[in-house]
Image (cartoon, rainbow, N blue to C red):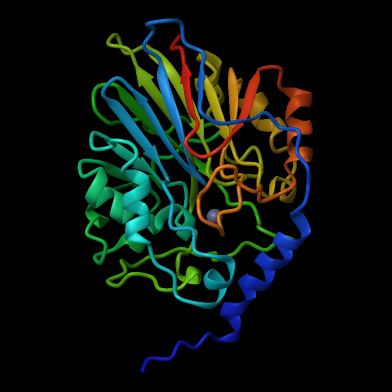
Length: 341
Ligand SMILES: [Zn+2]
């Protein structure tokens, strides 16, 4: 019989997660939580659809162009994540991902390589989105390595990412989508401590077993442009999957001067570990609308309504002080339809 041993240092994250969870629950929130369909398009107008998959997961689509961001449904529990091996729950992934046809997705965005952003990607890339490239860091590529069957499908962005002062390389995915990675950082989870920190310089030939083996690597945010046939920008999305300390994580100012973003997807969890998140991002991105992502407790099965992972009221108050536009906190499967410009 096989026994599972958990050395002391594997227990550290669960202590931290537990402390985190205990310190943050029970906070009422007055946020515009939404579910179902939020439609801002005119009748018969073909807009852009953004569908919330929970945690860092989204589908962005316009016509035949489709982008997936960090889909995650397995949601191992808190104790299991801290004490036991974890793995992608293939049945759960298939059940949830089958709700939408993502077979034409051109790309899957991965902001960093923690398990809640990457662990379910192999199943989805192999079974649901077989033509999609995977956009991520060198650590994302090396973590997927040779065992996953999709390591060769990763487009590495470490050396081509942009930042506040530098325009990065636009990568084209099909005729109607271009994407620029942006240098970012992963804010600490708790008291300045970031879980599962590190980079991978060699390709893994076996699947990571423990949460601690899904090292974050370099973190990236992304600008996603849906393009018109004349190459003008029809719709621009800023996507982050971790809180970042501004100006790290900013889009290039020269790009935003030409055109702000239509939607900024911002993460509220652990925002208080850095200064001026979200205010600085609103100023940098000039968004028309803001959506909150990765806000719920992902240690329980993905459900709606979900428990918040953190005290969102403080984040929301600060967002409202600097942002006049519409913003929402979507429940699982919420679908937004926005007009192109
Ligand atoms: Zn993370």
